[in-house]
Amino acid sequence: MSAPVVAAEHLSKWYGQVIGLNDVSVEVGPGITGLLGPNGAGKSTLLKLVTGQLRPSKGGVRVLGEPIWGNPRLFFRLGFCPEQDAFYERMTGMEWVTALVGLNGLSEPEAAEAARSALDTVDLLDAADRKIGGYSKGMRQRVKLAQAIAHDPELLVLDEPLAGMDPIARRKVIRLIKERAAGGRSVLVSSHILHEIEAMTATILLMHNGRILAEGNVHTIRDLIDEHPHQVRVRASDPRGLARGLIAHDDVLKLQFEDGAVVLETDRPDAFYGRLTEAAATGALGEIHEVSSPDDNLQAVFDYLVK
Amino acid sequence: MSSPHEPPPSPSRPDGPSFLGSVARIYDLSFGQMLWSRRTVFMVLVVGGPVAVALILRLLVSMDLFDAGGEIDGRPVNIDGPVIFGLMIWGFYLSFSVPLLGVFYGTSLIADEVEDRTITYLFTRPVPRGAVLVGKYLAYLVCAGLLVLPSVVLVFFLVVPLLGGSVGAGFPDLLKDLALLAVGLAVYGALFALVGALFKRPLLTGLVFIFGWEPVVIVVPGYMKRFTVSYYLQGLVPHAMPEDGGVTSLVLRVLQANEILPSATVGLVGLAVIVIGGLALAVRLVERREYVLEQ
Image 1 (spheres, rainbow over the protein chains, first blue to last red):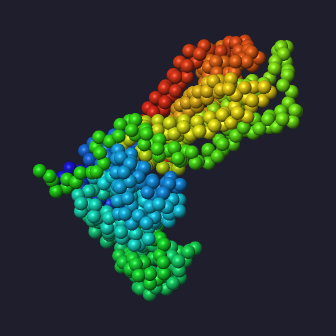
Image 2 (cartoon, rainbow over the protein chains, first blue to last red):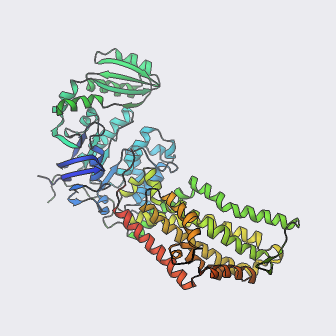
Image 3 (cartoon, rainbow over the protein chains, first blue to last red):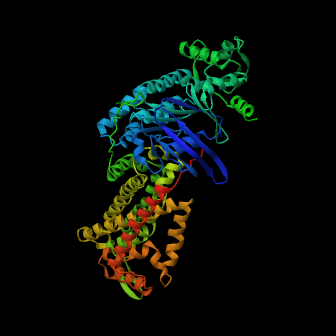
């Protein structure tokens, strides 16, 4: 059996009186592993411990066979795409990625080449010389991903990488993640949306209240998820036109309008997302800017599971 | 033999940059960010103050509205351009602008990245956290130097020629003053880098130190003044001030009367200890500390 890329043993993290992670022992193998759980489940805490940003309160975590806390050399082999939407806004995408990958010891031309290649991979080369402050949400997500992959790390850790992306960008990023895994790299990716994780991998860690609730195959949990209605918020140029096109299908249970967006409820997320991606690609229902999903539906499943 | 999961080699170098190499790269990344920040705009106004005063002074002299003669401590003193320049170095720069720059930039070296939530990108790269701090400290030093030193040179050329002063004769003193201010920036920056790593509200702590602690303790007889930066800086001030009997003797008398004047050697050693000790402690704290970002 292959050595685990991440091994946590009785790993706990407290923020004062608040428990972020509670006695987690888990081994993450090579390939793609999805970390699934509602907001506040402890996903980000676990990823921050895995990337050495936090020190364990108790227990330990090893990444690629080495302890991560206070071990910056491990970042030659590790790439991290954080959840927060934070940048040096005045830098261009090219300058920013070049500067960050330069911290890996590459010379300036090598760093520029690595940055160019990474920006090309995330389809951002055309906007590489624009300031990040002028990027859309989806472009900001992609440039974050570019800095994480620019040094071609063995393990890529992604915290909610698809949040705020339009359907086409989502599909491309999912393909990128799969290609990395096919190339022998490992990916640990978090999301609160089962559909996203399921599109990338069948191997999941299910988190709730700072604990690993279940680990293994995604299909078990997805049957449960499908029993609960799934909410999707779509920001589009013509929300009413989009709604007219989608409500015609019987898997859309209800909808409501918000400012520049429509929130739909579906009981068959797979079919729904498939149709939405197709609509975005063809432009048949107008321009789709952003797709997001509140995790109330997932929370309902977790409530069911922990009863 | 390779296992099926063994990844291909990564293009980044396993040996990576040295500590100093990392410092240089962080400096490159931070300098532009620091120089074009809103903080710098504010600081341009701070160091622009003495230039404005110098311009007003020039105007007053040209309109014959400035009285160059006077008395200090019952002795007649002839105030000329170099004397005014010396007083401005002490009053505007060393006592105000330099400590303020140190506080505003030094306390924010790491705090700004934490507040902007961009620290993650630096702390998830193969560079020691200490190198991040030192690289940003050097960026501060160059950035603050670029703000203060041109302002001093401008004031020198505006003020020194006034009332019979000579630019040529005063030039060596200008170089000494520039060196003194650079030392001041280095010392206050290192001290407040430590404050920034140590305290939750470093800016408030820094302002209390420079505008509360230092001015009060420095004039109180006793040992406490050794816990200020200005005590050690004062050890260097008379040697860098214009060789004018009036001002030099006045400053010396005031300082000596309060037993607050250390020797130049004590001053230099004290300042070196603050820079090296402050930075070393700050590096140690940053290496060990967790930074929990607000979501």
